[in-house]
Image (cartoon, rainbow, N blue to C red; front, side):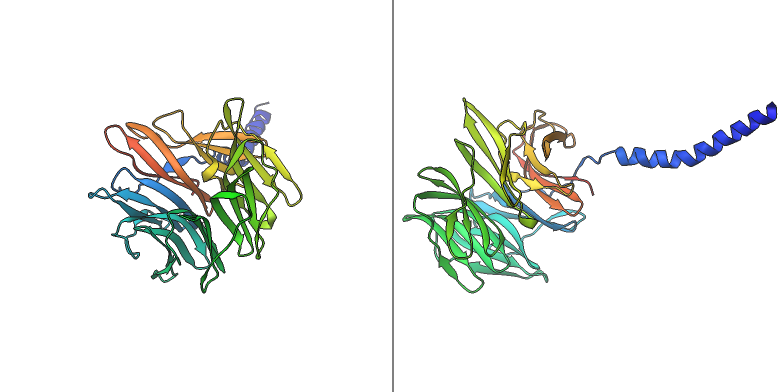
Length: 357
């Protein structure tokens, strides 16, 4: 009997030795990574974040502007190298009044829109780290948005004569007309030089326009009634996601629309009236948006995957009274955020967080 008991004991020990590593792996796989703080060198507050673009885990750029001691706005540029955020002040006009807008990767270069004391230009940084500029053919009163892809760049805005759409084909600029009834262009984005999307305020409401390489046309997107558009996300394989908000019965409600190559599908995730301008596709395949947090000392993010919406919080920040991510970007297998954090007794300054690594 004692011998049989010894056999059972030995078998139990052997089974534990075999099962435990697998169980440990399963347990580790079930643990989801959280948001971690990435320190950012301080700027001159209050600061405004314009955009965040990432090429991979070792290169990302964040743009915006700060307030100089003379009360004028100064352009603000930060570069992520996979280890830390560092301020970049090597670009033309870095010390002059102005602002930086959207950043785009074009081949091996990074292109950034620069409002240089009222005159618009595109900053171009080569793979070797050398900067050059592409001036706009005219000065606009408002520079609303910018996008660039290999073979083309677009700037939309206004001057005293109305809406302006400027197209750069690599050698020069051309002014392009828009359909009748367009009152204002609110944003623009592109997948290729012949597949460009814009959203506009028109005489009949918000409308999505599409450039097919020849002309701008109404894209016939069936937007919800009484709605506007915050962002359009063209993705590989023909998928397009539109994020915006609809006003109905005294309440603003965020919506997402997805084109699957055949039809549009509209959903209303539980996001309240969140502004969807920072909409990004994460490395997990889900859509991510920063939210207005219900915790003053932590940021908040929404993850939308089909019909399921989940939420996560950033790291706790001591004495914070407002943590506000302004932009999101996929960086390899991680998700980067960039924005502002206001600590009690001081003006908002820069913050950054990363999900995954």
